Image 1: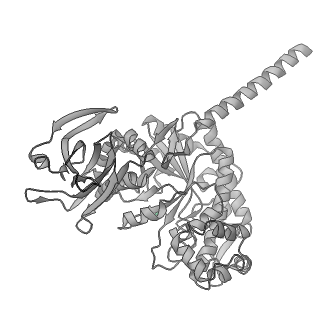
Image 2 (image 1 turned 30 degrees about the horizontal axis):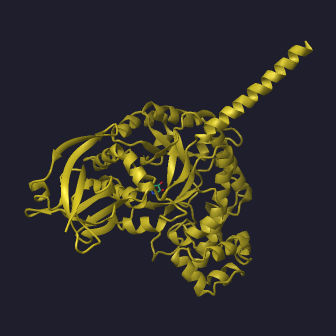
Image 3 (image 1 turned 45 degrees about the vertical axis):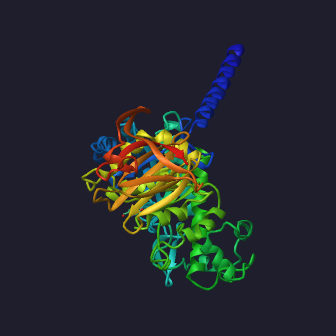
Length: 536
Ligand code: DGJ
């Protein structure tokens, strides 16, 4: 009997340690971010991955029946990933009792269509407000305090509620633990968005008593130390403000950042960031998927409070970075017309570019080329993807071309051997160095036909060889040496099928103006290869 018990307990120990090992082994393959050469990429099942994604309307994924007909449509639009809201109220309707039925159903539906998911954790805040916490949080203002504006509480959870932070983090950790149990083999879920467009709306900062006390106290040393250590790489607007106030390394918030709404915004950024980083940290301890936050962009002239004050605007991005490292990416919800300008502000060595919300349709079809070509974006995701707004399926056309060359794009990103561009009448030409040549790209123009919009990407494709994709532009090459000329040896159009190049026509006649230009006609989104030669 004793021997039997002994053998049994050995078996139990062995099987537990095996299952822990299996879990760890699977864990090692969990989606993660990795620095590869010149850039940081999302690695899924051991390979770099580009999210050609779309985000659902807020309420679609609260019903499996509602979602049922949507998944196949998304798969048909060449999407590979769907940003899918889940909410604290539906996961934990009663305190301490978790319900993962919806999450499991969404996973099953996505898997059926071979789609990946990024879950959006709608919890303490969504668009600056607090509409997604469960009702047991909403109706307990004592345990879960509200922010104050103009002397009164408002129905927005305060970042100073420690029990709110703990409750949110506990629920998020339960979700992550569940995902570890049900998805660490399939890797359907690639990333998590923590909260949604946080920041306080209606005032520049929380004016509750506890917030006022914190505002009149010393700025935490972690933050001032970060400012000192990173002074040369700080976002220019933050550095300018800090320096204009004497570049102090100790003092209260207004002593260090001045007596304006900007100081209030920085104060709120620190407190939202601390809270959100803490929620993310708890979740990562359960299952360490990459995590990001998204931003309601204010614009330079807007007053904090008209947009959520404390959300990770570019000018407070460093404050968010100083507050912790559990949030891997700070992402812009980029609907603004000056797409390139904003993309540039968010793409930093410590922050890969991710577009979790942006325009789809014709604008998105163009912007995605720029984002992946020029800024090595790891994902692009128009909002409201389950609408029928894009009747011409412009986005789908771009996505299917990009999907067919994704491995080449990812490889070129890591070698910094790719550029993307957006051309318009206001910005008709760009030039860049690539593969030992100067590449001149401009709006397409031939035999009196003129494109008024163009977009695409060009990458190195071997010595003297290039691969391009897009529409409405033309390309010439020059050498840095003034005495060397560069000619087009060949231009071929074609497609990629399962990674194999299937050439179609050779374009050395009228289509390239007799070898003068490498052209991408404005009528369709194409892939072409060009090779060049040099002569004196
Ligand atoms: C930005 C938010 O993050 C989304 O959830 C949604 O509310 C859109 N705005 C609506 O345009």
